[in-house]
Amino acid sequence: MKLLRIDSSARSQTSDQSSRGSHTRRLTNRFTRRWLQQRPDDLLISRDVGQSPPHPVAEKWVGAAFTKPERREAWMSETLAESDALIDELIAADLVVAGVPMYNFGMPAQFKAYIDNVVRVGRTFGFDRSRPDDPYTPLLAGMGKRLVLLGARGDYGYDPGGRIAHINHVEGAIRDVFAFLGVTAFHSIAVEYDEFGGDRLQASIASAERAVDELVDQIMQEAEQREMA
Figure (cartoon, rainbow, N blue to C red):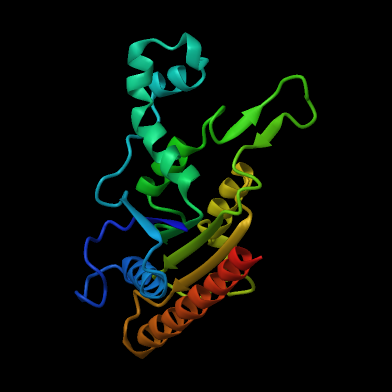
């Protein structure tokens, strides 16, 4: 299997390395380390958009992306080179493990830039004007891809049914974007209480790490059953 790990935290270290480190990097580390310990022959590709953000979509990008490939000028291909590389990684991956902290109730700008670069007509979704009632086609559908979203939040109660779930614009937005592309198998785990610290934060970290271990084992078991079928 091919795993694509995407980190988007602005913090470069993990929270088990530094008191100001990233909880999401801690969780993506744990997930991929546990996975490769049990399946060392699987391929891991790492993309750190937190430290090296993709360029945001600009006017030239839009013009190039909406020009048919056979009509593109050289500068258009150059403008889309970064987007093409990100899309190639996504298409190749069986399992996407994304570390996405909550920044002001939404995803970090660097992860939004990633999404804007991989959601592209003709590459990850299709658009057919002859079908006016349903013109979109998810081009990543049927590939068996999964998305694991590993998050972190300063406050608590953001999960469905929680006290402030209505202002969580991270998991739902990312799930919907990937589903639009055809990736509908979705899992999410998050650390909370970061701004509070203390015992509640430590308990949340411990709970998230247990959930990560269980999820790795679950997905791995399902993958092995498919491989044996």
